[in-house]
Length: 234
Length: 234
DNA sequence: TGTATTTTTTTTGTCGACACAAATTTTAGG
DNA sequence: CCTAAAATTTGTGTCGACAAAAAAAATACA
Image (spheres, rainbow over the protein chains, first blue to last red):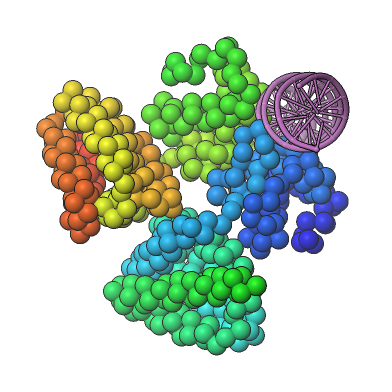
């Protein structure tokens, strides 16, 4: 299990309890340390994090708001399932959010935004170079989150972040397939997007984001199809 | 105050407490019965609804997730303010959601969806005929929510519902200005949208939704400008 | 042996109480 | 009379306990 969950005997500041539980659970859910569909026992969790059930419950309510857990009335809350049947709605939404945030970033970015975006891109390039699939997933998210922040629209941003997190869970399922050389292409696409944003070239930014999204969606689809074939073969 | 808040001594089913508080507070916030920025006292609320603070707090956490209240650490939670300075981000997002949901509804609707949509439209037409501004706001929301449901994309739907609720709060502020004849136009536009959806004419549906959104945004902008002029005059 | 009913266990939803943080008021000093 | 420190008040964050609901186990009956 996640070692961040076991360290706890140290006194925490008052008020940080809920946030702590929220962060721990969120990480474990997105990292698939907690399997989708598995129940979350409040008492067990309370013992593990050595705190009362009250802050645990509040954290669970927040996670339910994020769609990361599902609360069954009078029954245990469970980690949200991945809905493979309706993945197309996910792909549709995340593609649109890739486009919209990149578009608006080209329109509204401030100089300091570019600094942040470039820093995230450097981290992503590093992860690709190291062939570190897990780091690639994380840094790719941060790169696009930085663009979304520059777009300065909290409504798009919050939906996009939610979709990126959902995607993180999906990619985790298949991250072993990242051994190929494809990710190098993403680095270049990112560079092109940064250039279009900097030039305030909205249409090009939109087009690049759209293609980038299609790339990623296609790759995830491939991973799923491949995995599905393997399952059938077994 | 809302009378739904005072009836409570009757026993409620176990488990419905949080939902009840959530619904009451949500309505009061969206109806501006609770002014934006005003603090919410947990103890006072607990007394008013005659229940313990625990379910109150959980409801507040959910509302915070919806962006309807803001939680200040160790300090009272306050009703979310209306951010007039960044209204353009709201208009941008809600216009896109009008378009996307109408588009996808034309693509994915099932026969029973049209029945629901038409029922909502009838209620909206009735409200316009009655010159009942408050009912117009509510039924207009339900009409577009029905279209969003037919679009069958939970990500778009949840964002759109959130934006519609935010819009409800905005319109409440200015609903006195609904005395003019403009709303009749909305009825016709709604009819056109239904026709385009039924014909599965995606492009027309998109175009109509876009124009409809522009209409509404323009009207809200007018209301704000008019109000602003009045404030300056005073 | 299989099914229906009762009993037990487990786990959630709610409660009242307490501790701590921040805001407010009071008091002390210049 | 004004400023700064101390004391008080107000309200949140967390806790342990209890009651109701659901699930699991045990029992009765055919």
